[in-house]
Length: 224
Image 1 (tube, rainbow, N blue to C red):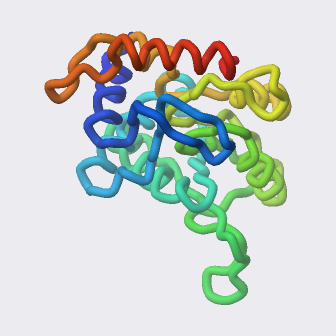
Image 2: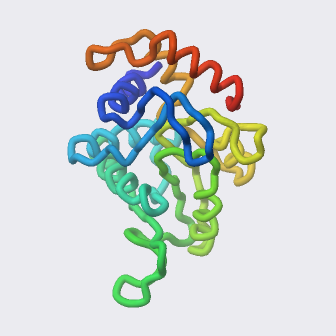
């Protein structure tokens, strides 16, 4: 496993973003883990987050793209900090862009916030986590309305590796199958479990035998 992936897994735990226990998700599923990307709130954590995203995007998609698009609302800061990190790490100027929930009709008009998108632009979509693919269904019409735009791929922080809307394959795989572009994550839950099982972070074992058993049972039911 790449060094940046190991560091990112520890970073999620230390930032209290990735937790293990007993949680009820918005979908109603009972889950032994929970991810809250809203816990990245300090300058230091956001700076590091952008670097992890930039490294993963560079690994999977290179630097032959023009725009980082972060769907509102959580995608807005993600696209900003990653665009900054991409320039600092690789010297490549990438525009950030996001959508507004309401179209602005004065000043900086339109539905987009940040860089404009137009014919010929190559776009990487950036999100925190994708469980159902619903946000992409809202994002694609916005991007296509800007002109002849090519979506290079989607990058999320964590691939939960659960079945999506179809109940047959993972949400990221459903998106790739439906829209025809690549989908990737900084880390997958398989990588998280492999790295954290029996491993101490901050002086404590994060995934012990009990949590590992709960995770195995969860993925027997919902795993893709």
